[in-house]
Length: 87
Image (tube, rainbow, N blue to C red; front, side, top):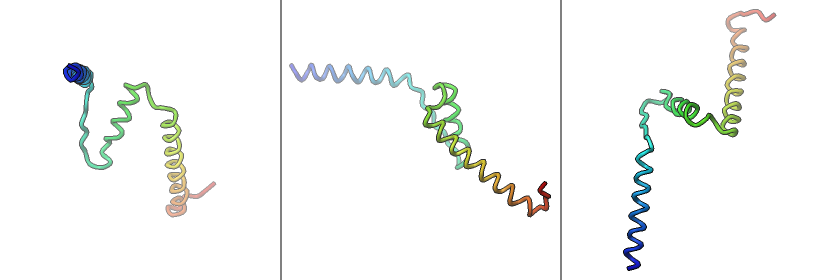
Protein backbone atom coordinates (compact mmCIF):
# COMPACT_ATOMS: atom_id res chain seq x y z
CA UNK A 1 0.00 0.00 0.00
CA UNK A 2 2.82 2.42 0.80
CA UNK A 3 4.26 1.89 -2.67
CA UNK A 4 0.94 2.84 -4.28
CA UNK A 5 0.67 5.99 -2.19
CA UNK A 6 4.22 6.94 -3.11
CA UNK A 7 3.47 6.25 -6.77
CA UNK A 8 0.36 8.47 -6.63
CA UNK A 9 2.38 11.29 -5.05
CA UNK A 10 5.04 11.01 -7.73
CA UNK A 11 2.44 10.91 -10.52
CA UNK A 12 0.69 13.96 -9.04
CA UNK A 13 3.97 15.82 -8.78
CA UNK A 14 4.85 14.97 -12.38
CA UNK A 15 1.45 16.19 -13.62
CA UNK A 16 1.88 19.51 -11.78
CA UNK A 17 5.39 19.93 -13.16
CA UNK A 18 4.20 19.11 -16.67
CA UNK A 19 1.32 21.60 -16.53
CA UNK A 20 3.55 24.38 -15.21
CA UNK A 21 6.19 23.57 -17.85
CA UNK A 22 3.56 23.92 -20.59
CA UNK A 23 3.19 27.61 -19.74
CA UNK A 24 6.91 28.27 -20.28
CA UNK A 25 7.80 29.63 -23.69
CA UNK A 26 11.16 28.51 -25.03
CA UNK A 27 12.99 30.29 -27.83
CA UNK A 28 15.95 28.94 -29.76
CA UNK A 29 18.15 31.72 -31.10
CA UNK A 30 20.59 30.73 -33.81
CA UNK A 31 23.20 32.90 -35.42
CA UNK A 32 26.86 33.48 -35.96
CA UNK A 33 29.07 35.21 -33.44
CA UNK A 34 28.23 38.88 -32.94
CA UNK A 35 24.83 38.39 -34.60
CA UNK A 36 22.95 39.95 -31.67
CA UNK A 37 21.60 36.87 -29.88
CA UNK A 38 22.60 38.16 -26.44
CA UNK A 39 21.17 41.57 -27.27
CA UNK A 40 17.78 40.02 -28.05
CA UNK A 41 17.80 38.19 -24.71
CA UNK A 42 18.71 41.39 -22.84
CA UNK A 43 15.97 43.34 -24.61
CA UNK A 44 13.40 40.64 -23.79
CA UNK A 45 14.51 40.78 -20.16
CA UNK A 46 14.10 44.57 -20.07
CA UNK A 47 10.64 44.41 -21.64
CA UNK A 48 9.21 41.42 -19.77
CA UNK A 49 11.09 41.17 -16.46
CA UNK A 50 11.17 44.79 -15.26
CA UNK A 51 14.73 45.42 -16.36
CA UNK A 52 18.01 44.43 -14.80
CA UNK A 53 19.14 43.66 -11.27
CA UNK A 54 21.39 46.26 -9.62
CA UNK A 55 24.51 44.10 -9.97
CA UNK A 56 23.80 43.68 -13.69
CA UNK A 57 23.47 47.46 -14.03
CA UNK A 58 26.80 48.03 -12.27
CA UNK A 59 28.52 45.49 -14.52
CA UNK A 60 27.00 47.10 -17.61
CA UNK A 61 28.14 50.55 -16.49
CA UNK A 62 31.67 49.21 -15.93
CA UNK A 63 31.74 47.74 -19.44
CA UNK A 64 30.39 50.95 -20.99
CA UNK A 65 32.98 53.07 -19.18
CA UNK A 66 35.75 50.83 -20.48
CA UNK A 67 34.44 51.05 -24.03
CA UNK A 68 34.13 54.83 -23.78
CA UNK A 69 37.68 55.27 -22.52
CA UNK A 70 39.08 53.02 -25.26
CA UNK A 71 37.16 54.98 -27.90
CA UNK A 72 38.48 58.26 -26.50
CA UNK A 73 42.04 56.91 -26.49
CA UNK A 74 41.73 55.83 -30.11
CA UNK A 75 40.23 59.16 -31.15
CA UNK A 76 42.96 61.05 -29.33
CA UNK A 77 45.82 59.00 -30.78
CA UNK A 78 44.39 59.05 -34.29
CA UNK A 79 43.99 62.84 -34.30
CA UNK A 80 47.73 63.23 -34.88
CA UNK A 81 47.68 60.61 -37.64
CA UNK A 82 45.08 62.52 -39.67
CA UNK A 83 46.59 65.92 -38.81
CA UNK A 84 43.77 67.31 -36.71
CA UNK A 85 44.97 70.35 -34.83
CA UNK A 86 44.33 70.31 -31.12
CA UNK A 87 43.07 73.62 -29.76
